[in-house]
Image (cartoon, rainbow, N blue to C red):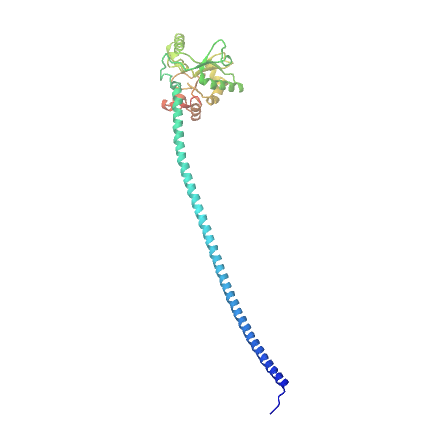
Length: 317
C-alpha cells in the first residue's frame, strides 16, 4: 500500500481550491465585465434614446414657439384690425351724432334767432323805414316813442332846442364828433318836427313862395321825414346859415364820404323824384342799409319798400 503524506494531501486540496477560486474569480470577472459592458450598452442606448427624445422635444418646442409666434402675430393683427374698426366705428358714430347735434343746434339757433328777430321787430317802430315823401302818410297823432333833446354844442343855434330819436342819437353824436376830429364843423340845423309844426312851417313857405315853389322843397304835414325823429338838416360855418349853400361846403363832401358809416343817408340827392336837391337833409336808416346803399350806389327811395323792410330788424344794431 502506497503511503500518502497528510500534509501533501492538504496542500493539494488547497491548490485545487485556489485553482477553482481563481477560475471562479475569472468567471465572476468575466460575468461582471460582460454585465458592465451590457449595462454600459444599455445605458448608452438609454442615453441615446433620451437624447433623441430631447431632440424631438426641442423640435416640438421650436414648432410650438413658431406656432405661438405666428398665433401671437395673427392675434396682434386681429386685435389691431379690431381696434381700428372699433375706432373708425366710434368716429363714424361720433361724427353722426355731432352732425345730428349740429343740425339740432342749427334748428334751435335758427328758431332762437327767429324768435329774437320777432321780438326785436315787435319792439321796433315799423314807421321808421317807411318811404314818406309823397308816398306814405303819417297821421297827426304819430310821434316817436322816445326823443332826446340835443346838447347845445351839437346845434347851430344855441337859442333853439332840437329833439332827435333817442335810439338814433348815439349814432348822430358819433358822426358829428368824428367830423370834428377831421376839422369839419357840422351842426344840427333842424331835427324832429311834429305834425302841427310841419303844417305851420309849410303854411309859412306857401305864403312866402307860393304853393308851387313850396311844394318843391317842403313836405305837407304827414309826409315829412322830420316827424319820424330820425331825419335832420345840417349846417356848417362860413355860409351864414343859408341851406342852399350847404352843397358847396367841405361838410357836405365829408358827409358823402362818411355818413353811411354811422347809418345816415342823403334823402333827396340830385334828380330825385320828390323834391329839389337837398344836400343838407339826411336820414338815419341804420348802418346795414346805409352801407348797402353806399356800396351799390343806390338811394333810399330807389328801393322797393319790401326790400327796405328787411333791414328793420337791424335798424339799431
